[in-house]
Amino acid sequence: MKTNHILLAIALALAIPPAGTAQEPITVIELIDHLDEALRDCDWKTRNLTGAPKLKMLMHKRTMEDVLEALRAGREVDSRKLEEARWGHANLR
Image (cartoon, rainbow, N blue to C red; front, top):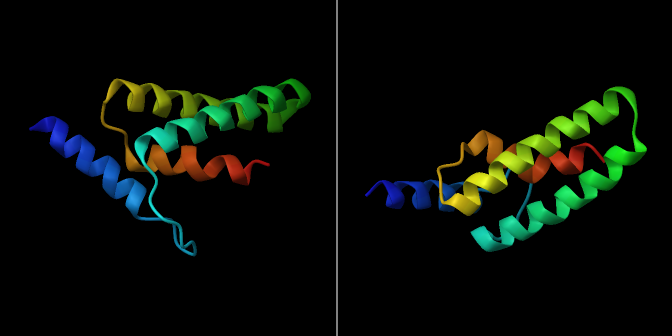
């Protein structure tokens, strides 16, 4: 029963895009692939940044790692963390 609620929450979070975008919902597997790619990008960027920008990127990287770990384990993911992991990366570029 709880698993159904978790899957429903993830499906809703993926189905409702942020304001101003018209994207089709993605699957959990696609989300995991996207976050893996973004993590590789973060690894590269943190090697080339210093100071406050590096700290912001490291904090964002940690958020993405937490979300990825939860998704892979089938645990519930807070919608705010999911959105931050999905869209926050683009804001740090």
